Length: 326
Ligand SMILES: [Zn+2]
Image (cartoon, rainbow, N blue to C red):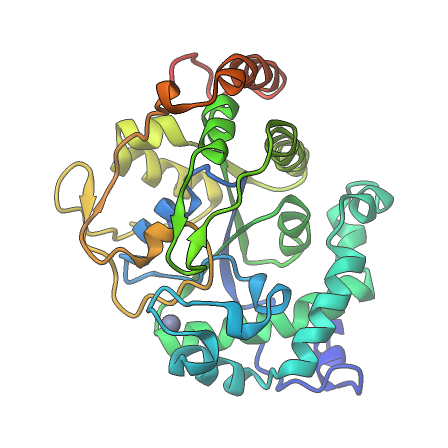
């Protein structure tokens, strides 16, 4: 009996023994906010091989009545998610436990304490206890969707490290030029799920978010395969660039994304994405096209500061594969 079996059967975690990290195929998308993760997960969900769930970690980070699924239903009213949680044996107490455990283990300081070593994190019983109920939920999602590979686009850097300890985890990191990311954060965007505008962090907070996830992904790439996907290249030539990134992440075989033409895909049905960019509510064909920042609409101070900050960050962590244009 391996350690995760013992945990699942133990009194500390009374969940049904249905989640096995060993067998669950997972693709984790890391990256800064506004780096294209919702676009990528929608493209993947169009395939019969991938089921995308959005930012999975909101299941324990947010009160469930504040989560609007991409199907349009509030989480407590959503038969898909209620069926999944019941199948996995997860209720409010388990979600509260996940939230408590996350604050302890999904932290950069904790990963540094483990010497940035996946084997040490893998042997950490608190990491196992945090991940086991999640794999039970993920396994229930895979069963309910009838698709083999789960896509979690929570994006957070420490979470990438923890999930990378599971044998069948694949890592995809999105890189978007920091100037464009910060400018996007500073632009107004309405979120139909929240019923209000999305948060608009200041330039330092947006820059720090980009830097934190970038340095954790680059460090992880020394320990585990991490496919680096450049948002600019994806927009310029979607199908081959996405196929190459999936291959680099370790996904074998054809991704089976049903491209209508060079940059459009019919969205997949039964799409239950928990959180992310409001584009997840769109029902029409997914169109991949570069979103250019309209600098004329930026505040004068931002127009001056963002390129300087973004240029500095891009010099520290350059575009994967090289090249200057974006
Ligand atoms: Zn739903």
